[in-house]
Image 1 (cartoon, helix red, strand yellow):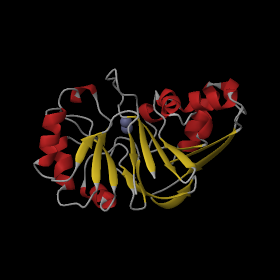
Image 2 (cartoon, rainbow, N blue to C red):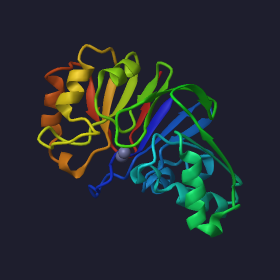
Image 3 (tube, rainbow, N blue to C red):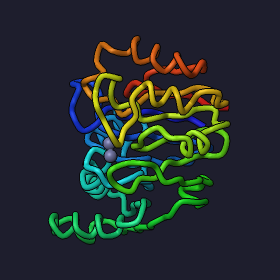
Length: 244
Ligand SMILES: [Zn+2]
Ligand SMILES: [Zn+2]
């Protein structure tokens, strides 16, 4: 499996990191998780291209995870692609319907399949996936791909999510802010380190980074490392990780 971080930023721009988008590929199958602003550009830069993304899996409906959904639809339509599947938590159908109500000219341009999922097991784009409800300001799902890859979506750090991720070769986890930012609905390095302590995880990539984290990477890693002694790194846009 190959996981490519298209966007490792968040709702406030750093000038370098686009909003959330993660590409998961295996055996010719391709799945885009989230489609925040910049995903379309990064897809092109990644060499995969929007033509090859026919399924999008959403963690939740915040703008920084869905902003490029309509632009993806439009680009696919212009390129002569006829189909797009959009899978996400409850409310995804209403979200897509309402976006298309605002952008009326985009109606009926693509054959859209929209599917809502609940926590538990499901299949998407040929991948068997588990979904787990996170702790965030909107209903949000974390996704796990067997023993290979888990993505936290947006979430506070908590034991249930750490349990869900345990045993993954790669975990991509929200780590939005450094410790001195008073935050709910997202982790700080200290809270993430505490929840990851003693978990068996191959490697952790920190993502969903606000500009507050610029120049603070060393201290954030130290803060996590005070509790968790595993391999932790910062994700970067267009970084690809191969997972065996
Ligand atoms: Zn969010
Ligand atoms: Zn977000």
